[in-house]
Length: 333
Ligand code: 1CP
Image (cartoon, rainbow, N blue to C red; front, side, top):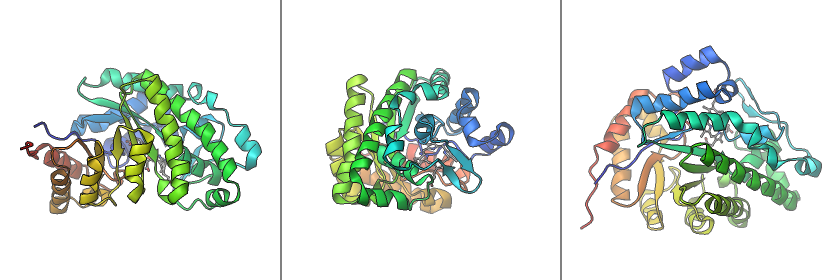
């Protein structure tokens, strides 16, 4: 059987010396992401080095709020900043129609990358999921605490519903635009879905994802949709069943037996701990092989459970790719 396909979340970026060199020359992250020649080059860098089975376009989830006028910027050492949303008036002023016109450089990059890639290498487009985007927009910053978002969930859940509805329409429009520009699969990153428990997860992670998947599948049938409600734990199976996604990306908190169980419901993507990739050596090889053995001959795309850590030596990535490509899958008996 063919080896399992492999690509890595954050495969382009600061762990690569050629990325750091280009950043040095070209300037800040947003300039690079918004300049198609540069974003194309950055997207292709890890493909040249490691011949991954897929390229993911170099961009960011926060381009949606930026196109809506929330003024994205990156403060050195602080991560992303946005103008925080202040109440119902700000939410009502958000216009989903500006998201595709406001992101023409991304569309241009997708076309260029598709033209440069080998036909056997898939091109993946992506977007942030509505809840994760809302958390950055309400708090105006990342980091994972999101105190203002938690307050809004308690104090005015209906306003959060309205915000997520505008974002769901924006995300669907962006993903359809990305597909038309050259993306052959799309991934939805709900990086902070783990903040939601029980009913809140159904309402604010599953609900919007279901609406987006339905819209993208109806508009562009046959394009695989990868969903990543990071930290969903016991709710991963429900997320897959209820959203209609094609491939479930799981984080490294999912145990090997739980992963095998989830795979019975459909294709999985993941879930090596990025710390093992950072560590390298026997720990890396053993961790990767354990995942390959547990996923067996079932449908599996090898990936990490979250993004590549920036201190990761590129040699470790090469070692991982060799391990995955050298692993022989059991033929079904
Ligand atoms: O200086 C730099 O190099 C900037 C760091 C950086 C990079 C390389 C940011 C800022 N974004 C990106 C690119 C990026 N972001 C990609 C490129 C494609 C690839 O994977 O190679 C992707 C898919 C993203 C997606 C993204 N951005 C997510 C979802 C995935 C995840 O990590 O959970 C999130 C949450 C963001 C927000 C964001 N953008 C940048 C940073 C540092 C962050 C995280 C901030 C925080 O911790 O809250």
